[in-house]
Length: 568
Image (cartoon, rainbow, N blue to C red; front, side, top):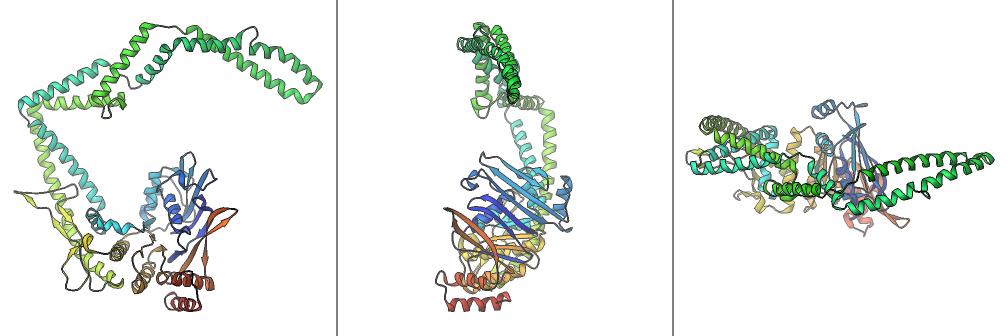
């Protein structure tokens, strides 16, 4: 559970600290007050996007931190902490993240520095953010399978299947290459052999290009380099040099220090400067003496760089922008392919056996996943329908739309996620046929379907904190009342943070947090605080009537709070 959030110099927020409670926390405020900024700061803390534009104008660094309570039921989070050697303090851990105006970001879990990806991996066990436009993901049919797999607890199994399927695809590709005609295979062998020999004969070293480029710079600009070093050397080492001048000044300053002891520090500093400059003069003199213009070496270096340029152009994916390491990797891969093709018959028989074994494994794994998906889909539909009924969509029929891919002759088609196609189907009106959700649902219906999905996933998910960023987009009236009541029920099992612009939802919250924008000292800043009593009545009234707050809207606000919030 997220207990508190501290924000410093993030976007419009100067300095802010807010405490969250268990249950349903609603965040409200006028348009532009900074509600999205608060979610942005929280997303940043959880490992989300980082950009210097997030730093408050006039500041050099933005900081966000938050305290999270972790119960013993959260096995995933506890295992992550144990793996990284991080201990809880009173069942709590402090998350911190900063971004500097240089673009550098830093993050900590407790006192342990972590990477952005590590932070995101850990906080995924703690918080689930549902963005205000996330329901639009339901318009993408490819996302439907992911929702079903999450409900069926199949994510890890499907990931393992995808790796197995990728192995099969690669083995089949190699087998297809081996089954080409003798002429094509001979041509391929010849090309691979030439590449390996050309790269091997170059005897490349990963670091040599940078060294050669530096040497070419010295040799090609020898005269200018020598002349400039000579100027500095003369200034440091000549009869009227800087070093000689400082040497003459040392006894003078020593005499003055004997008169005024406060000058003693200058004596020691001048002596340090003298020895430092003397060392520089000696090293520059030695450097100048070893400078030699060698036109033959320059030509040799340039020819070597030209060779590396040609090899990068031929063997690097990025062409001349590649590097020697890529050339060597190409050679190693070409050598591996060459050995495979040269040992054709034996390798082909072995590869055919591997492909056959993998095909059986892939089919059995896909069958297992498909069976579990069908079982989950049969349970998912009625649960979604039950939640939608609570959200003002009574009579809606929902179907996961699970079908197997068609057969190709005698073979079942299989993809990287199995042999199932998933496309959610819905009938929003009794008697209407099931049709694709992505094609017929309105924005308000999509929001409610997404909330229903989040609800049934939350029932099997141990993520303690759920954040809804304006999930009420496109709805109002009695539907908003239903959604508010539903979120309040969901808050019995999870901590809920919900940004809303609808009074009918806000009145259901256990804790009401107001976000407001102010101008102080000619700077715009966002402030946040918990509101209760008359202040909450006034805020609900504003949400009902806009700027035209009246006694009627205030009375309406009191009635809603009394009926749905249990308070006046």
